[in-house]
Amino acid sequence: MDVVRSRAELRRALDGRRRPLGLVPTMGWLHAGHRSLIAQAHDECGAVAVSIFVNPRQFDDPADLARYPRGEATDLRLCADAGADLVWLPSVDDVYPAGFDTSVTVERLTLPLEGAARPGHFAGVTTVVAVLFGIVRPDRAYFGEKDGQQLRVIERMARDLGMTEVVRCPTVREPDGLALSSRNVHLAADDRAAAPVLHRALLAGRAAWKAGERDASAIRDRVAAVLATERRVAVEYVSCADDVTLVELERIEGPAMLSLAARFGPTRLIDNVRLG
Image 1 (spheres, rainbow, N blue to C red):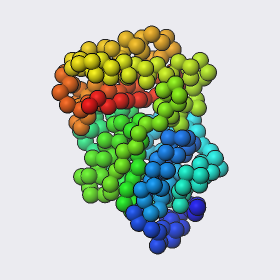
Image 2: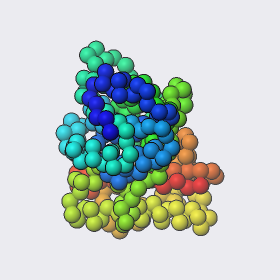
Image 3: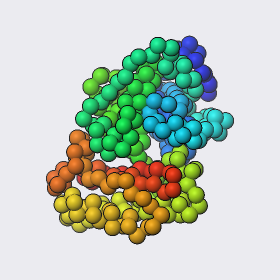
């Protein structure tokens, strides 16, 4: 596995790689969810590149950026074990050279949910992913469904701008249902024990939908009722939105995304399940 840090090294390392080329963009502190993305790309592509870059432009709180966990040596071992052929670890200056003055923005999809809770977040996400796509030029890019809105935003950007094929990959969970996230490391022991309530709440909403409930407000209320059983959770939002437009629904008449955001102490977690 090649490990490179500059754009020039990356170009040389990519030269002559087998196609199709798969890209797995990450911010590091890799876990089994990232391993599954790399492994799927390895199975479906001629070569796999992984980027590890903690993107400052998608953090609205400098303290949150400073707290984001990092572990290069462990990350590289996971990449090698999962079948990556190349890992790119650029610096901030390499991704955003001096004078960088461009922002890539997806409009309507970024307004609700995480976009409302974290202004400017998605402009940072789409800009850095556009840079990665432009430099690496992958045939396919692999993203997990855990970040449901982000996945839909990146799909829209890639489709609108003719960039690359975006491949959806299933959320990987702990045995108790908690979605794997690099932020889970910040959970205190009591909060970690309580955090699976997020998935239980989403499953309760999905169970109501499977039983025939189509009133979106009733589905949201079912999720909220389960969340209310756990005193350690501070709920930010519960959403039942159209799976394509992310507009909040009154009635569920097609595919929908049931999602939520909540805090356990200072740690903010998100999760979602798809209805239909």
